[in-house]
Length: 124
Picture 1 (cartoon, rainbow, N blue to C red):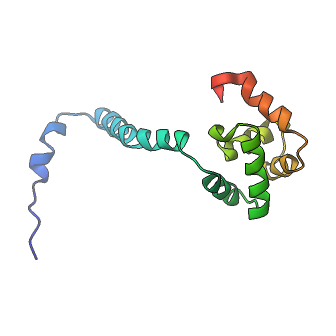
Picture 2: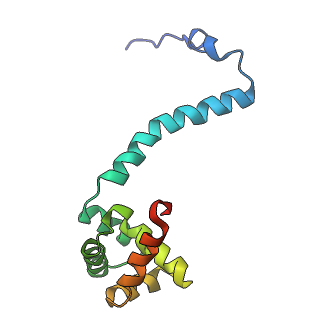
Picture 3: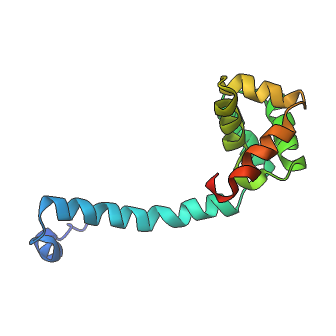
């Protein structure tokens, strides 16, 4: 087995003159560079299966999740994220996420939900 060459001191030279605050700022800047493409992929690429999976983790059954996802698809809100749609509706109604999802399954509130997202435009 090869022994790892200890080159830490050489690799840290460009960071040695930075203060703790500068190091922290550099860390978060690099972390953003790494994470931003993943966030962008998540915004642009989703499927009903992924969205159902999100709802399962929010406590809905697979049958409930399927109905909610179908409603989101029918109302053209898939790009907002199904979990986001349910969460935002729950906040608007001041009810639990579960209650909001169950209300959407009843097919009575989709106009309200669509208006929630359309009245805010890009502020979703």
